Length: 97
Image 1 (cartoon, rainbow, N blue to C red):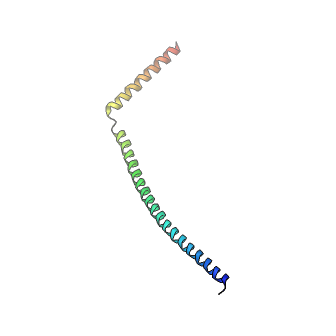
Image 2 (spheres, rainbow, N blue to C red):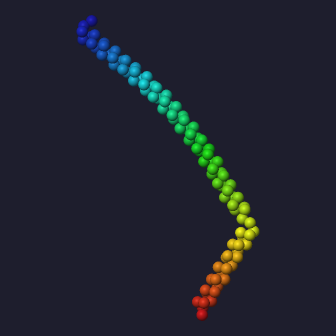
Image 3 (cartoon, rainbow, N blue to C red):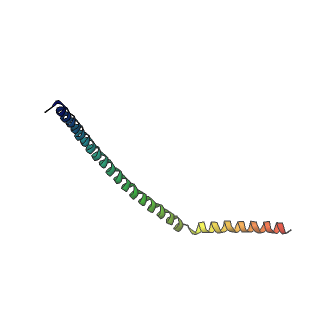
């Protein structure tokens, strides 16, 4: 074996060792990133579930508010509308004069 062959083999071995090392590093990094991705997906799923629950709760509250309008509230609203109508009528009468 000549000197050039020995140098070529040593260079090849060094590059091969470096390549194997980088492969192992990338494999480990891939494991970590996969684990992180799984954690984020789980957190996203949990947030979606919480969002859905909150949205449902919000809709229930809106419905409860509509249902809970008591006759007093309706009577108060009618009275306020009647006052506004009377005031508008007075303004119209004033303009006619």
